Image (cartoon, rainbow over all chains, first blue to last red; front, side, top):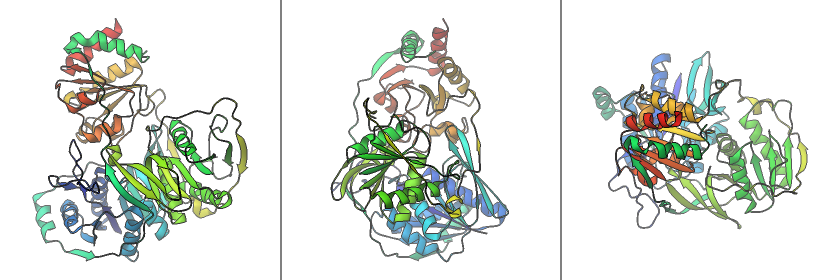
Amino acid sequence: MNVLVCVKRVPETGARITLTPDAQEIDTSYLGFTISPHEECAVEEAVRIGQAHGAATTVLTLGPAAAVEQLRNAVAMGIGSAIHLETDGDWGPEATARAIVEAVRNGGYDLLLFGNESADSGGYQVGIRVAHALDLPCVTGIKSLKLADGVATVRREAGGGWEIFEVPLPAVLTVREGINLPRYLSLQGRLRAKKAAIVRHEPERGAEGLEKIRLSVPREEVTPVEILGEGAAAAPRVAELLRGVGAS
Amino acid sequence: MILALVEPGELSLEAVTLARGLGPVEAVLFEGDADALPVARAHVVEHERLDEYAPEAWADTLAQLVDRLEPEAVVAAGSDRGQEVMAYLAARLDLPLASNCVSVEPGDSYVLTRQRWGGSLLEEARLSGSPKLLTVAPHVVAPEPASSGEEVEVERFTPTLSDKDFRVRVARREQPAVGTVSLTDARIVVGGGRGVGSAEGFALLEELAALVGGAVGGSRVVTNLGWRAHTDQVGQTGARIAPELYIACGISGAIQHIVGCKGAKKILAINKDRDAPIVARADYAVIGDLHEIVPAVIAELRR
């Protein structure tokens, strides 16, 4: 079996987001970089499938030269090989999906894992676009995955309960945080990752119909906070507030 | 004309409200009732195999309606299904999709504002394509119900669907236990963070939630530590809640968490630290140790 997991390098934003003067990007001068929690879980899931089913595992990213850091982190977690689609600038979901399709079309992957949505742009569509172009079934937002006899049985949350899908492989699955608890990087893993060979391509950027004009930080609604009191003495006022919203 | 995918619930009403700013709206319904919708016409989808949710079949149905009705735009809620079906429609029609819009200016191309980073950043963007495809960010647009007297003209529509449209279809469901209040429906949510101290510490919050008919949630720290199941997470990678009151106990208020709870009408922060970010975002605050305050509140409610 052959498993691919796709990740995206994003800044580790702190309590406040600051933009570059031209309002085109987040000012990342003082920020580290990471991948989204959904994608961390997708990488962990791929590693576990690799171990349980003897599957070959590959991590792919589309992004700047520096995104090699995110590929190496995935290899340090236990992924076997890495593909870097090296690009300039902020690619949207249409161009990203097209480039991924070109890169993986002949890869013979049985399972293609994505995060449910990227942390930064949050378009909720790259996995589905890739699945459509490759004519594969796709289930989004999964929080549990079992593989047996060439069929993936997956569960996702819906209305407080669960929806269960069964899809034959090959398939595309987009993962939500909560499917597993990702492991910490081991020293051995980091050493192996340092030496890992990374296959590099430079895809052509295709046309896109959603064009970024500028970014802005939303105005924070400054509602004055009413301090109801300190410690247990504030309990009567909290109870009053709760009764006010119809606490039974 | 704007075609709107309508699911039962508040989020679709928000999406229809935004869509009405772009032109006359016609709704597409796979389930639920068209009567109370603020639209002139509703296309009610009927197909023997659509008794269970199948995202590709829904998208194919929308594509057939797009072909027949030639709408200027197709709009859906930024719900799980809304995002999913619209992404399939976009892939199928080879068109761009703008997700989580908060406002849209009509025109040859739409100039719109959409959420990034779960709403902690906004992007102004130009959307082209025919039809324009977009989803509406949850809990941003104030929903306007139909004014009384508006009649909805209902038309039945039976799409032509193939086996392939049903290759992804809900095989079975597990329903929540009877009597549980779900995070996204609760009128009151009691949330706990690192300050709760342990998995056992949540018994206190459970007791308060049970007393007020609410649900218990937790921050990402708490679900990563295994103190609560991930299904209880309130945040960018968990549930987006919109209760009447959110009580944040021992939660500092990282962006990741605020994104999940800012739909709450009111926030009460219970925190030792007067300067915690959650206190600045709250409407009410009690400063002190939640392990003293919550039991006192429970005692007060029981009096």
